[in-house]
Amino acid sequence: MPIIVNLDVMMAKRKMSLNELSEKVDLTLANLSILKTGKAKAIRFSTLEAICKVLECQPGDILEYTNG
Image 1 (cartoon, one colour):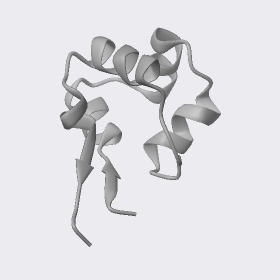
Image 2 (cartoon, rainbow, N blue to C red; image 1 turned 60 degrees about the vertical axis):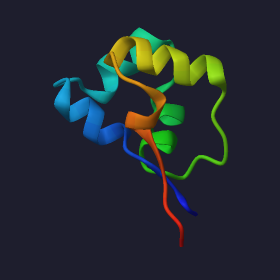
Image 3 (cartoon, helix red, strand yellow; image 1 turned 180 degrees about the vertical axis):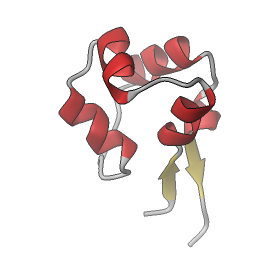
């Protein structure tokens, strides 16, 4: 898939664990893990907004498009 999820990179930059992020964005660990590993087929804007708010970043910091 040409969309790469860099959630783990932003979490590392903010020194935040998956458990902590899960609690703050009110998302299950399982769903957050699927997103983090790049196995998600979609993401709701409300979820993306919550993640960006907690991690103090932009959507482009988390999602990256590659041509190939």
